[in-house]
Image 1 (tube, helix red, strand yellow):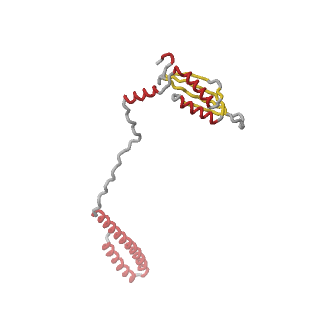
Image 2: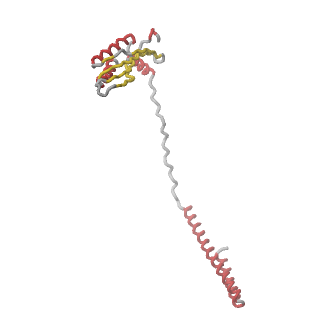
Image 3: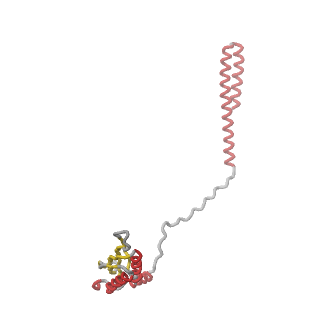
Amino acid sequence: MNTASFAALLLRLRLRSSLAMRANPVLAVAGLAVLACIGMIGWTAHALVQLEAERDALAAAARSANFPSPVPSPVPSPVPAVALAPVVPAARLADQLEAFYAALGPRRYAEQQVRTLFALAAKNGLSLSQGEYKTGYDRNAHLSTYQVNLPVKGSYGAIWRFALGALRAIPFASLDDISFRRDDIKDPAVEARLRLTLYLKDAPGGER
């Protein structure tokens, strides 16, 4: 029902209420109450119709407006999670492998290197007990090892000077472990045990 039809219906109800008031006052009061309710309903319906019309007008205006289409943002190129290592030419690998084996010490002079360690210990004022020695061979790397365990006694600084001097004198050696012990805190001398490994390029018994 539109607004005009509802207004015509309301006018007819008012005319009928006027006639009923003249005929019967009780019925006239009841008619006025009904008329008031219908009036409230009519006002509400009218407000809803206006609201619907305004909403349709806004929707039409939004459709007719010329909004520029959004420009998609550029998608960044994917970054690899792990960078691939450069490929090393085979000739360069061969040169590096040759340089590695050239840096190893000759196995037949291993006992001479042990004498060098004893001379360095004496030079630094250390008392050196009999060491322990163990040989080995790595088939995959094709190199021999000569492990030396040396118990020494002296000042803390002298022991470190001996250890660093040994690495300088024997460049193919590694200091694998060093431990210190002092029985009495008043004793200036410290007992230490060093484990060094000599890496040698000759296999035992000519093994390759």
